[in-house]
Image (cartoon, rainbow, N blue to C red):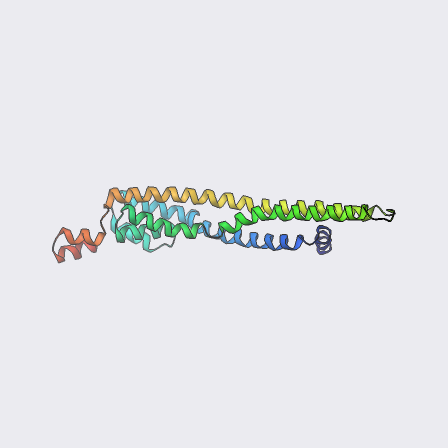
Length: 222
């Protein structure tokens, strides 16, 4: 198998090496993103989101806080921000934008690989065809046709390899993009429910406005 691999690398020419590097980067990034999204939207993450939404719809701030404090998903972090600073639009947008940076991590890398890999394949095609034409335009008569087929083989292998690398990055890229959009939709729903249930003022300010210090302490402990 290793011999076959080296044979393909040799046939494809120099562009096979940057394509190999791009394929390794793509696989590594895709694995990291898959682990991240499995933690956010896996079975445990979905159960945690459902429990948070149920507590928020019932207006149970203490239960919502407890659920948010025992999880490190994107939903729990947004819930903690809403409960601590109030469910205003400004707080919600700020918290979501902070999480968007994490959700979009390495997406530009995958997008670049999707664009660059076919271009490298085309570059290999051009260099392979140039090699073949150089041999055909030589002054000596062609005795062995395999000399020309080497350049054609380089062109085809490089093109195919570039397309394969791009496709292997494209499918994870599209899947992660869909997960991001679904997650953002859930976060928008969470912010709307929090605004209806808890209002837009910070929870501490609400407690202070409700009465004396003993009453505040009692409410804070609920």
